[in-house]
Image 1 (cartoon, rainbow, N blue to C red):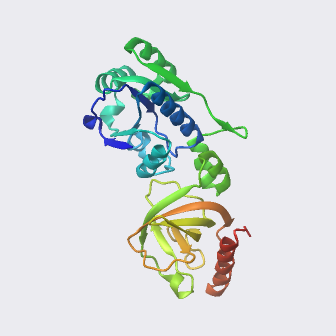
Image 2 (cartoon, helix red, strand yellow; image 1 turned 30 degrees about the vertical axis):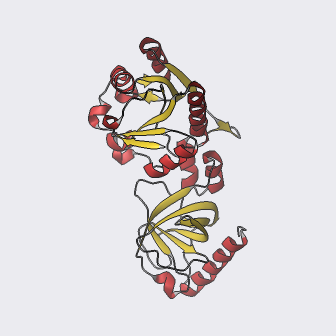
Image 3 (tube, rainbow, N blue to C red; image 1 turned 45 degrees about the horizontal axis):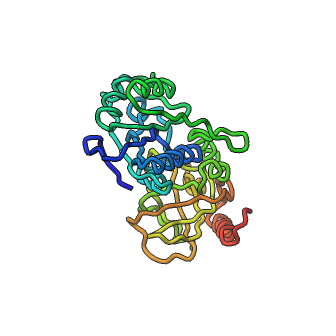
Amino acid sequence: MQIINGLEQYRKSERPLFLALGNFDGVHHGHSRLIKGLVDEAHNYGAVSAAFIFEPHPSRVLNPERAPKLLVTAERKAELLENLGLELLIYHPFTMEMARTSPREFVEKLLVNIMGVKHIAVGFNYTFGHKGSGTAEMLQEMGREYGFTVQIVPAVELDGEVVSSSLIRSYLENGAIESAGKLLGYYPMIEGIVVEGEKRGFTIGFPTANLAVPADLSIPSRGVYAARAEIDGQLYKAAVNIGNKPTFHADYPICVEAHLIDFEGNLYGRQVRLFFLHKIRDEKKFNGAEELMAQIARDRQSVIDGDQQ
């Protein structure tokens, strides 16, 4: 898959352009249905299958204090979209100037004049243009005017729930890993660079990798989780603690610590991905290091056995 950063880098192809519009945070089941449908349609017509995504997310520009946490990084999103067969991904900067663009300007200048789009796929709740005043139905009407077709993809339901990024985020914030994974279609994942921590894990016999996770990423609620850690393409079982170390601190920033099983080596400065399987227990304050060590040993064994305790 080709990735273009900025529409100024885009060059029209001789093949028609079939374009998905949206943010696709998490690339969940609803998103994957839209993208797969677009990819299939593009294949049938000999067209280029593409997605146009604003980066950063518009909410982080318009209202950063209230912007929701993201489910995946831009890099991870690109991987997930490529896995669905997408041929071209266009990331375009979202600015205050772009925010003032009317729906018609967006369609005429960007979609028609620059990209020459022939077919568009959007979700049922897609909005665009100044203050989100453009709707999917309005896009359909403009398509008839400007000569492109628009498919509006309805909501996807699983077990009576409408799949959405906000619902997945809510599940993660409550530690409901399996529920979040069901809607995503894959294990929830966070990633970050391993940084130096307090190194207390080494002193109590359970060394951990401390991840510096991007501040705008959504992470599961405080607690201990069974996970898989990916390092250089290899997977290792891991017990992951998310919390503020109440046994040793009255007040401490939330941190992500992964105890990797059957891994030896120095991870400082390296990128690690954590795939969450299920929650083992809530965070707890223990009466000293010995009690904590005994619990960590049980958590570790739970991960090895594959059973939740």
